Image 1: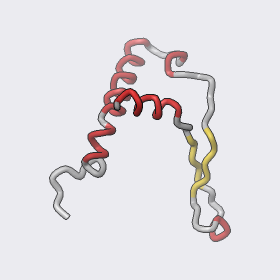
Image 2: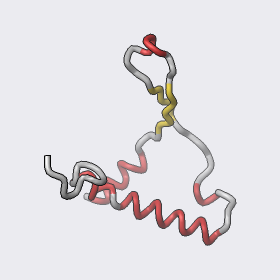
Image 3: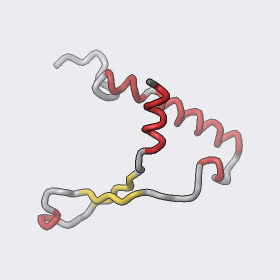
Image 4: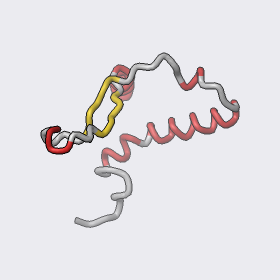
Length: 82
């Protein structure tokens, strides 16, 4: 099941959101989205290799914890009643 979720996540479109700033003409939609397609990857990013590895490990750890947060109804809600 984890493999299927991983494939689904990799194939999912990434969206970039911006505030529409349209006031009342935005029909209750304060955010606009566009597909985010960029040829660069984290691997092609020019930066200190040690810092890049540290950031990458941190991001992967956060992404791996996503299923934990879904089970808890979001981050920071453990142990709260109500």
